[in-house]
Amino acid sequence: MAEPAERPTAAGTAIPARRDGRGRGAKFEQRRAELADAALKTLSELGYARTSLREIAQNSEFSHGVLHYYFVDKVDLITQCVRQYKGRCMRRYDPIIATAGSAAQLRHEFSLAMAESMVQDADLHRLWYDLRSQSMFDPAFRADVAAIDAGLCAMTWRVATRIGELAQVSPPFGPEVTYGLMDGLFQQALLRHCAGDAAAADYLIMAMDEVMARFMPLAPV
Amino acid sequence: MAEPAERPTAAGTAIPARRDGRGRGAKFEQRRAELADAALKTLSELGYARTSLREIAQNSEFSHGVLHYYFVDKVDLITQCVRQYKGRCMRRYDPIIATAGSAAQLRHEFSLAMAESMVQDADLHRLWYDLRSQSMFDPAFRADVAAIDAGLCAMTWRVATRIGELAQVSPPFGPEVTYGLMDGLFQQALLRHCAGDAAAADYLIMAMDEVMARFMPLAPV
DNA sequence: CATTTTCCTTGACGACTGTCATAGATAATT
DNA sequence: AATTATCTATGACAGTCGTCAAGGAAAATG
Image (cartoon, rainbow over all chains, first blue to last red; front, side, top):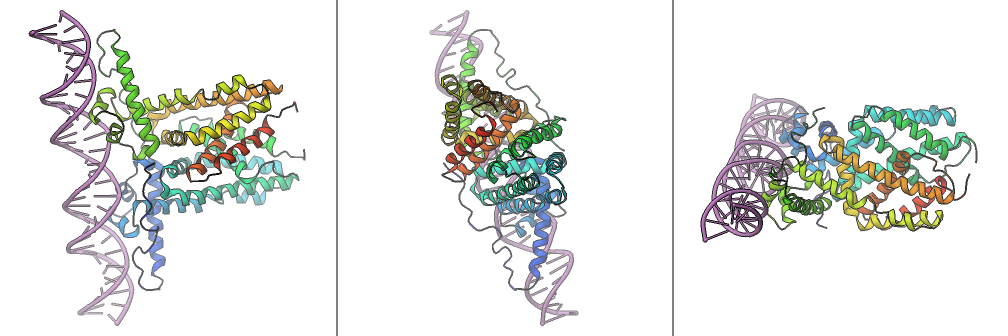
């Protein structure tokens, strides 16, 4: 198989040997997050294969050497990125879930919010699929990718169960299958959008509505 | 956006200036295919980001310089790879479609064949998702990726319509939506499989059966 | 203020990348 | 057999990569 070797050191372990238990670690983590943010921007613009540490540093206000002060590795930096991405996108649809008054409304607003996010954060979304693909080759990314995937699955499931509650029906599939189906449609639409198809967002809304109408009917079947 | 520039020359154009119309081109194309095959092997093992021309040449019986005799570019080589991959996987399920005697049988055999292919050709499948992600960043891959995607969509649709014929019902969704849903489940299972989940194949079979039972019922609804 | 610790820049290292020019080997043609 | 065309190997090129060591700047500590 010849896969990349296991990580020699656990990510984030003993970076600067924080020798005293004082509050020094907070500022350190803050700068780490700041740099990971610059990396996130670079990665979402160029993709994993074309992103270098020097380019990341150029998207920050620091020089390239500082990256090795805050991160042991390129992998350490990127996994930090991925974790940061997670926190940002994981609760995106919760407001909609909380405020929707009917199943039909939630269904529709969910489709709209998905399509809007697909256009608005297209760069971040394509990066997610890029990194998820990388995790199939490089074991170093698997743990974080799996964690995000589980989070997205849970997010999808919250929507599905809430629709079920409002319509007084139970979702026809389990969390994983539901997430797999939605994600397939989303990725398909994103691919079109990135290829320049201006109708991609409308297609996503249409497809989501169509599928949810079958899957999560408004009345018990 | 800062996307990579457009390809200066069309792929495969005027490679060695085949000066006479004789049958010389056939042997040329044959070696091109042979080298692209070595590249396909390398790519499926390492992924796009980690694959170099020298490594590809090492997986063939030639030296690295030969690649620039048969291909103008790294992009030219990889797009040739992608086209070769296309022809290999596009008609995989046609025998099943032709021989299945009932909707239930076709549904079941399709799920089994998908799962078997996922395990058997896992390296090629993950490469496909890798390259598809690349196409969201690099326009050079978009045309070929779109062509393959359309082919896979058509393949899925042939299965769906045949099931509909046998069961005397019409598929509930159009070709694109049907393909998007199936592809989502497949990719999810592949991700698990590549992460070492031994139950990924069984999950795919279960999920496909479950979804198809709802989507393509055996009797008119 | 002096001293120590933390932070950041600079410049270099070896390795690797895609590309290409040169020239030798092989095959086809005259 | 001589000559030309085709194919392949070698080695070098200008860059870029991740990494790291050395030292200056800044801040915190005494």
